[in-house]
Length: 108
Length: 115
Image (cartoon, each protein chain N blue to C red):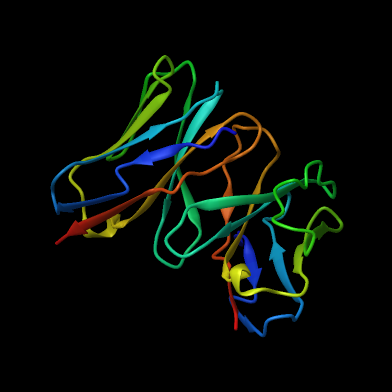
């Protein structure tokens, strides 16, 4: 399947630090999406990067994509306590498969 | 506008009973997805609909699970003869179309507890 696998499984940082999480996948993709899930809520779409893009920015988010290595990274700069959540990647062909996510804790 | 709505938000049922979970997608969204998330786990893909049609039902965990969508809108996920291992959060999502460039919009899920 096109399931992504996020790494690390858990990450704890101080407010103001940067957080980096990675995603690896196995099949060819057309795009890759990142989602955030706050505790007890559904997932929220953050950003989409197309297979012909290498980097994309959205506010404090920076996403990179390396299709030769079948990997992507999500960088959150100047983290805030409100960024505490689980983050999932979804490499997409025509369906959406999610991994187990990275649980990020930002300590105030 | 309104987002994806799921009901009930919580459901406690006894083992062996049937349950129905409901999903109201965003108006105009033709694609609808069901996922299951066990405690602290990732999302397990169950089924998707394009309009009222579900082309691939192979993600459903067993024949106790079924789903339907009527009028291209509301969807119900039915679990018959519930088992304790069915306890999880069931998430529904919709997207404008089935195209991979249409992000998913999720509801807040139904937390099912089978006692």
